[in-house]
Length: 220
Image 1 (cartoon, rainbow, N blue to C red):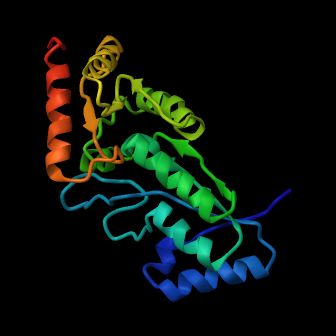
Image 2: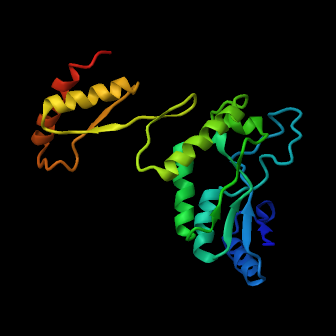
Image 3: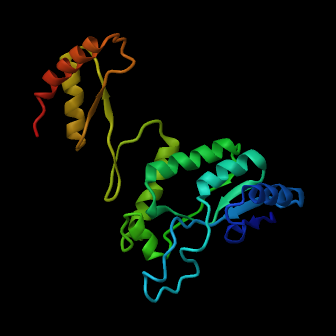
C-alpha cells in the first residue's frame, strides 16, 4: 500500500517556504504522494446568512494546478487531486492544465474529479449548480477525447469545440470544406492563413478574399 499526505494548506497559508519545506520533508520521510483539496472561492458568512460550510472566506486554499506546477519543481512525489470540482471549470482548460502537470511530473499526476457541494462557489464561477452532475458526465467523455485525439470536434449540452479551416488557394476546395463543416452542424468557422507561405498583409488579405468568395456559397 502506498501512503501519502494531505497538504495542510488551511494551516500553512501563503508561506511559499513552508510549501517547499513540507513537500521536501514529506518525501524524505518516505511518503509517496501529496494530495491537495480544491476550493476556488470562499463564502462570506456575513453575506450568506446561515452559512454552515466547513470553509469560508477566511480559509486559505491554493489553486491546485498552479500548486502542482510548483511542487513538480521541488519534489518527485506523485501529485493527487482530492478532488478537482470539474463542473466549475472550463473543460478544455482543465484538460490542458492536467496534461501539463502530468508532463512536468513525468507522469506522476493522478486526477480525481467530482461535483462538489458549494453552491456559492458555483455562483461565483458563473456555473449552474443544479446541472453539475450532468455536466461532469459530459466533461469526462470530452476529457478522454482531448487526451487521446490529435484534434477534436465536440458538440454537447455544455461544451462545444469548433474546428477551424486552413486556407488553400483553390476556392472550390475551400467551399467544399466549408460545406463539410456546415453539414457537421458547426456554428462557427475560422479561416487560418498562417503558415501558408504568405509574406505580406496584402497576401493574407488576398487569401481572405478568396475565402470570402467561397463563404458566399454557404447558407445561414
